[in-house]
Length: 366
Image 1 (cartoon, rainbow, N blue to C red):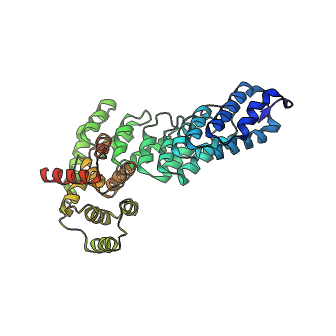
Image 2: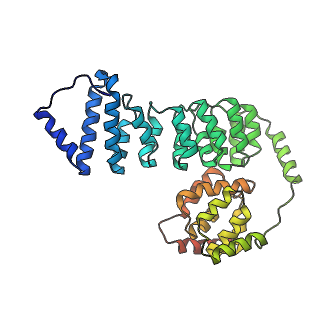
Image 3: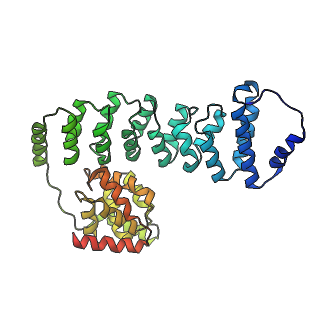
């Protein structure tokens, strides 16, 4: 896009030319800001046939700009309807600090870009896409197809997304394995009475009470069915030692100095809870029995959080780790979304060794 008339070079152009020639980051940001100001003031007079030229200028400037400058530009352009589409797409694919306002609000962002972000970008980008207001049905289906727990939870909390009854049924089905879905789904405006009865069987007592208060469900009948199901389920034996094959593999990795915190997330994505338990115990020099008890806690995911913090797992990764553990472990450790939020406090501003010591003391007190 370019302004309607091209004026000849004059004294008024000199500040622009000086900024364009400068390599100073401050000057570059001033140039971007002035260009945005000009486009906003002349938005109705922009010549469509010259749009490529302005797009090229913006992209060249953004490519050379520092991240904080790109982030401030993204804030300014988040709701602009005149911005070059390629520029908006580029900012949406940038680091999440830059992309967040664009993904959340830009009217120029197309579904194809949102779906690309869901399949090719970071977990933080995916969560932001699922939280985008008035998300289309096509993108909702793409979120469901991916099946990433943290992203599904963000979608469940998006009351303005175009979620059909079929899509809502898929979300409720995921809630059987992803405990964090229970709370937002119980409050979702598109949850039907029929789906509420299904959800009732998979959530904790507090959420069951909320479902009963909102819908006309036969709580007594559902409680009876739930009790019968639990009575028929075989009790899981307590674990005091890791699986022999898993222990040997973990020991081999440790001996080769290849056992690192990132391994925990990798094996969970492969649904290898046995390797996760053995690796976490090895990394933290924890008693295996304590790790096993932390994973089966009915309401304290903070125990697992302390163990993970103690081996240096990154705070941003823990929500995904918790959801994957719950998927592999029949919803345990329990406590729902609120307990999961509290568990993040285990990743405080203190050394890893402090968290590891706190985990050992907590398990001794349990």
